[in-house]
Image (cartoon, rainbow, N blue to C red; front, top):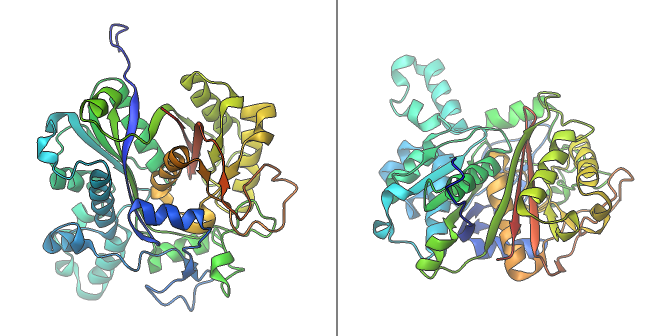
Length: 418
């Protein structure tokens, strides 16, 4: 972009979440601050033969509250979640009537790590049990991982930038970051951005169980199964849902008198180039991403008030992320509160960045840091301030969100008080 173009400031004005706690940002936030676990025994299918039996499910969800029931049936659950979170975010931003917006300057970027897993599973059964004529004509548009952005755009009349990002568990964070860059560079005025995932199915669980990635030691006490940075951690807990932000240029938000949560001031995307599933033990690329966002925001490491860690509760991730934080932020790392809200929500895969970016914005707004629950037995390899078990009040001026994905993808965002 030419030097003649002035980069714009970008803010968050609306938040929409669909999680195991229910729909809506305030229910989500109050549950996190209370240290409430949304994890339980999986109920949407029989888990008798599965090594891991726990998850964070949206059992309450009713797509018909957010879109025409006929249209809902034509779309995968992950798209339904995205529409719901988008409508909730617009309502939170005071933009329920989107007809008043400039549609050509209104975009949507909603990522998903997997896309229509339920559709894949259901239509595969139809094929093998009844033959090719039993496969739905809606199968392909329902399962592809870009379709959530497309359907949301149709629902809300957004004709601006629109695509889907697939980078495993970094998808939502990358989507928010790319939307930030479009707004900053003047390509749009307003964006819906985040992630959505609905992979709690027999097939999804079987795949992750076969990788030995999920926790199996706490099936009898599900709410204790996700324990990031704790010595007893043994794998992640799968969650489902969606997190979507309304992002605007500062001038657009101010012109309409919007309530602003915070500013987005930094974004970095890097790759480990190390292993298809394991993070780099040295955390070089993740550390670089954190240094990049601090530099872009024009602050010092000592200015960071809070880090919402990727913190998946797997032995490798938590150890290596701890090391990356230390390398990136130096002596300041020991003084910065870090928490993993996955201890309560489980891991929403491609939607993780959406709900965890929301956590950063809410922490800045309210001066409260949610805890890492189930942190009972410190691991010598994980020795930062993980805000154990109880919410902490603090003046949060700058917050960082990290998310990592299979393939070595790293995405980091920096938020700051306006």
